[in-house]
Length: 193
Image (cartoon, rainbow, N blue to C red):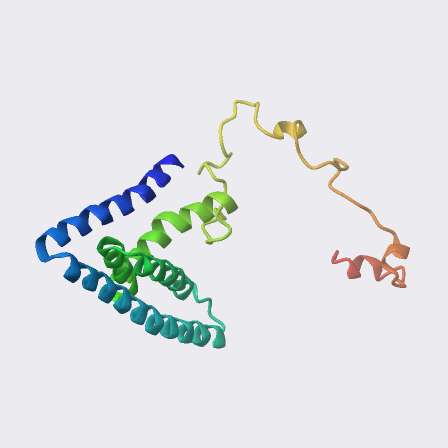
């Protein structure tokens, strides 16, 4: 956590150092004008891209699709708007990079594939992203993992579902179903031949 706070504190330091460098090169009035112009450009881009992203979200929702990329774009636009409002050339440059669609796409891919998907898989066991193991035994053999006779529920011992051992979990009579069975039809209605 402290690393992230350190990185956040590093950005204003770099921004102020770069502003001082630019001001010594081109002068203070031109530096101030440059900062104001980049902020205005950023705000205009945020406005245009926000409208475009909202339209894309509405179109995807209208056809029943999830607008995952568009929602990530919306988050990036919020961050970009905050960065362009912050006085400084470094933050304005980062904000404008997040505003332009062809430079935002690789950032979106990186955040989705390297940060969000692994986090969601970790928290949900793979259910959120569909990366769930569904085939056969997880360790590849016919008998599963070799626990040396000490594994879970070996020979009916150990943790497992509580209930009768003969395979019938519950045996409900006719009154529980509230259906009037005839003697010959009871087995057929329960799915037994």
